[in-house]
Length: 151
Image 1 (cartoon, rainbow, N blue to C red):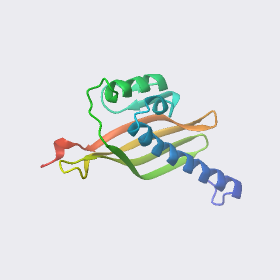
Image 2 (image 1 turned 45 degrees about the vertical axis):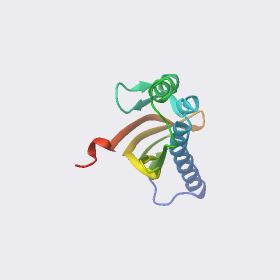
Image 3 (image 1 turned 135 degrees about the vertical axis):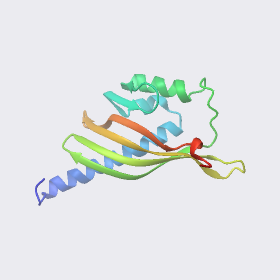
C-alpha cells in the first residue's frame, strides 16, 4: 500500500471498516433475537458458516441450520442469553477483507446474575457484494466451553 493515502481513499477505508464492524455486531444481534432470516442474509450468496458439524453454505441453508440448531423446535431453552462481540481487527483490500474478533456468550447463572457460558473467536473472510459487506466465510471457534470449567 502507498505510504500516503488520498483523503478519499482514507475515507473509503474508514467507511469500509465501520460497515464491517457493524456486520460483526449485527451477527450477534440477529442471533440473539433469533431472527434467522436476517442472520442468513448477512452471508454472501455463496457464503459459508463453519462452526461444528458440516459447514453450511448459502444464506438460505445457513438460515435453516440456525433455525434447526437454535429455533423453537430445537429443544434449546433460551432465556435472556446474549453475545458480546469484542476486539475486532479488520483488514480491507478493495472489495475483500478479513476480520478477527472475540465472542463471549452470556447466560443467567444460578443466581440470575450474568455469567459467561462460552467464549471464543471468529475468523472471517468478507466480500463486498452488490455494494454491501457480507460474510464470505465465517469460522466460529470455541476457545472455552463448559467442558473447560474446573480444569
